Image (cartoon, rainbow, N blue to C red; front, top):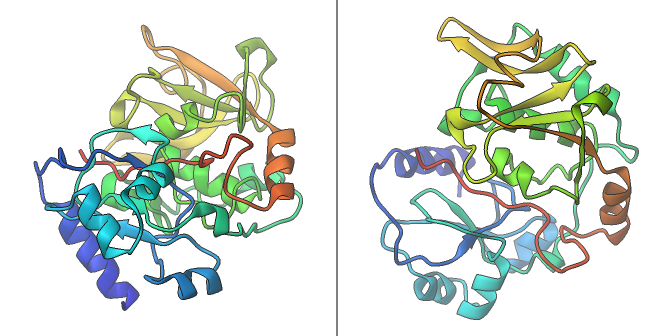
Length: 276
């Protein structure tokens, strides 16, 4: 499918409101490109994962039948996050074990990750939902993911997760640390681990004990990548803040394994297109 038509159809599907996918009882997973070939031969050639864009009348059985896979495998490949699923979401329809990740750099760099933000200061705006997928606009979490991909911590095939996917990587990709121990290149996530999507959460990168760099939003006219203090962004009254250090050993382990999965055989990343 022509990639322009793909995104056009994706946006149309996404903006259909209020259509619940109660029949679809599977979860959301990542490790997939948005531009994904639709057969196994192409999937192997492009070293990516085949995905399905959810339609309003989909069921587990109908999707499995369409791609000639078993419902059991389909559920297993999408079993990391059990959640409601909506039209426009992407679900894995090929075995992630067969996908070889591609990294932008062999040695990850916190300096490159931070520089990604500096390079875009004054050149981009905060956008959520359909506008968060990158190139010119991001939201707070998709910006952190994009910076980590650029820095070589994540495969470049990784789609841009959100704060809940970041919480899912606690003690794997991210090591919890105390605020007093934060340093350059660490990451903060503001919000509840139960629900931190959208305006309920925020994330960015630590510059020092007094400053953070992040895709922030103050007003419709004052938003974008900014350097600020912690208060009002990384810290808010009554809202928990979690601080993390990227787990270099975990990154090395995943790179050495040359797969998208961890030692437990579960997808490293999970993914859900924001539905609200």
